[in-house]
Image (cartoon, rainbow, N blue to C red; front, side):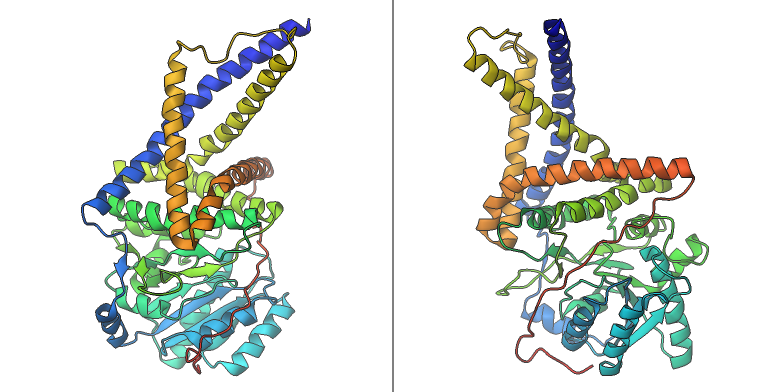
Length: 474
């Protein structure tokens, strides 16, 4: 009886192997296409970044400063908000700006921390939302926008640029100069986001470096080149006032969609559909410790926190984004949407791949150790087309390893480049755990007739000292 059951099980594994190999082929082809476009553009003289040499920097620094408002939503962020705002307010190479920090009426600790900061820096302002927390980030940002409008009327100022950050962000001193340089030529500017490295043994936290390094050095560059669409990353984003008014008109006088867990992602598509221009500002700094002007921050260092954060991204981008945005009539944009949503397929496919490998290893060990073991036909006959398919998939896997190694190593050093290879397995495990958590959340919300609730990520802020001569009064 057990032989029949084992035979049925082995047949299931074989069918799963064929399906998984085909899906990996499709996904691998897709990824290789983006790689090919990127490297062809580089080899034909299309530089993926703008070099901030002395001449260009002098041009940027000489421009008149437009008034800029920076929004920071802060629910239960008393542990980090003081450090974050103090570093930003004391290091910005820009004078004509204001920081607006959104707090909640039932979060007294964060309010006290912001009040303390505002006493030192006159350009820092506390906003208290109408509703107690926790609400969505979008709701907090909408409250800040409303406060900014009142602030403008009372102080006879008009902010030409409005941007936002999270409470754990390390902001580059030249960020506002970059916003000032590109707006109003563009209506949405997104700076790259690069995680801060931790010790080499912190595999969970450091796998974000690998993913963001490749995505923001390569994928976003190709995305903008193909479609002109640049999604906001939720931090390091700046909008023209035309963009803000356009979003208000599209969303019942609210800039940010409170029904979405990734309101930042949706904004880029909505502005692009209205014909507004967007730009991913990858600005390279020659002879600098870190090669780009970027947002830096710590990402979750435990499995639980990483899964919670990534499940929120999957809910917002894949499930809510699919429902809200649908598909585009433009083929290239639909292709990009497909790439954003293919986690629906690739995450369970990766899990199936690991499952198959475990079964094959077990069978090889079992038959190798016991000469009398029952033998089942090979999963992959030597004269099968599946061998050819697996060779192709092996090539795609090697390509993924090389790409990940290059972009991580180029940003963080070749030690981290080598470690990015085993961290690919960690990333796959975290991603499919997040996928199944997101799936459960969506199903539970649908049964209850609600939207998926906001799931806050706990934040850390690094201990940083200001370089000599960089500290400025507000």
